[in-house]
Length: 188
Image 1 (cartoon, rainbow, N blue to C red):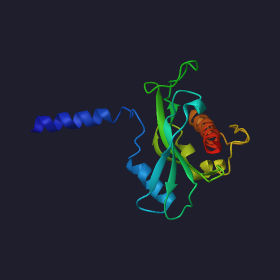
Image 2: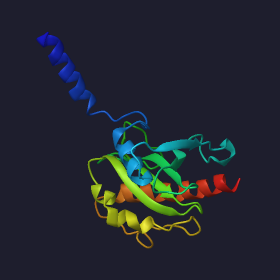
Image 3: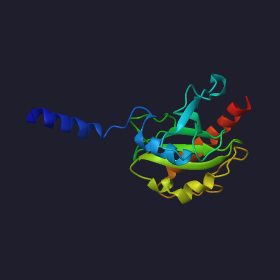
Image 4: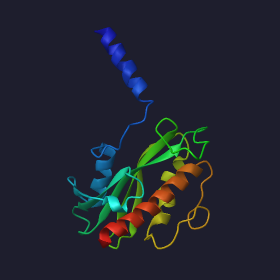
């Protein structure tokens, strides 16, 4: 019995060092954020299908949702997604795409109004060793009101953060892309 417990403990310890293979939409942290956003303990959401004709790549690492609850009106949209970032010393070859062996990640959500315009950006699951400063509410607040009409430029319209360079560029690019994609989806 002790041997089985030790094996189980070692397995769980080792698995803690390997990142999750996919975004868990039943994650407790995500549910907690959706409860806050919707104003109810039992938020209801419905996935919005993304037409393949609108995808730049074959897939996205997330989902667009409509969310209903006590404190928000209908026609609110939420994007829940994952952004890959580089591990320290990784991603030195910019020609190679990010993958789970050379990257870390964080999960976040964007709440849009019916326009769609960004109302809130929240990083709820940060799995990177550096750059946690970009999860700060004050820093994320600068995306509020973004509607995809203008480019977001790190160092100009978006504050740069020393030590979080890759994460800052990654989330900025992803917010731009997902805002523009949602506008196309809503206009169809």
